[in-house]
Image (tube, rainbow, N blue to C red; front, side, top):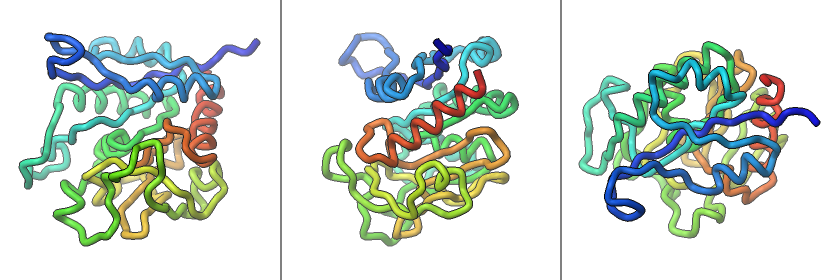
Length: 240
């Protein structure tokens, strides 16, 4: 049987005294089960900056996951504008470091929600610090309905890898973010956009697979989510 691709997934770090009285790593189960579902082997990645080169020798694909935190605005040369900006610099530093090196090796990368924003920062882009405060929109990007349901539509741009994978001009997605991309980084193109203009997807077409999406395909709500995950795993298999 052909070898299954190994997919590294970045972890969150929590200090809330719930699971443990001491700091603990966290990863929602469906990040892993969705990778397994489409033929990959999910491997959570701890923040070991000294071992990044060894990690990249092992994995065939990289998922930059989301989380209930924000990227420090210093990374895109801004100051914090609002009190609701919650940062985790240890996580951000690791994700930037591993993402940069993975890009150099052309290891397939999928950025999900905050992972898309991280990917954009690596390419020199910037972020909207709070959608509700900075934009005029009727779309609630922090949806009130459960995350395993869709909440708004997204238009896919033609002549993009994302469109070639999903093969639909418009899809429905879930939404769980208060920040979004302001300017896309150099070398990235916008592949998906919400009706209110919020950027919902980016990609680097010079890479074998480098796509970021603002929604959470790991919930596998729609066929478009499944197609994206399958496309990512397919690229990781080629990298094997």
